[in-house]
Amino acid sequence: MANIAKKVEVGANIAIIIAVVIIGVSFVRNHTGKQQPASHQIPIGTKFTLQNVNWKTNEKNLVFALSTNCHFCSESADFYRQIAQAKAKNVRTIAVFPQPVEAAQEYTKKMGIEFDEVRQASLTGLEINGTPTLLIIDNGGLVRNVWVGKLPTQKEKEVLAKVGS
Image (cartoon, rainbow, N blue to C red):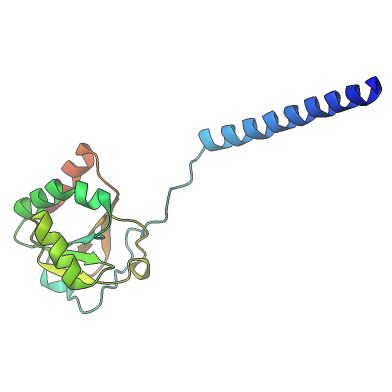
């Protein structure tokens, strides 16, 4: 009986050591070297294909990919109002939602933001995998800048510098 107890104890100790090694290797892999991006974002230089938009009419187009149920979008409302007030005359703002236009317009009105256009489109079909996402599209329809998520102050300043007069 003592012999069986000893074997069980040795086996348990070996199992604990193996588990600790696996957890340690996993921790090291996740916290050193190159980190994988949290999600795929549309690459700079990509042709942006939003239906029925003539990109040539404006030097810059700022596209906001939003969702009515995105709390980061709602939390960014003050910043979006600031962009709408600071943008240069040659910059068009387009809000794109996966929800119907009527719901999107009600949402933007409630947030107090006036976009030049509000549209419905599949965000994944536009290679956008998270909201909020801001994109600057040039007059050739090419993606020039991308910002994803609720932006820290420094990134907000970067966006304002790109769209301001």
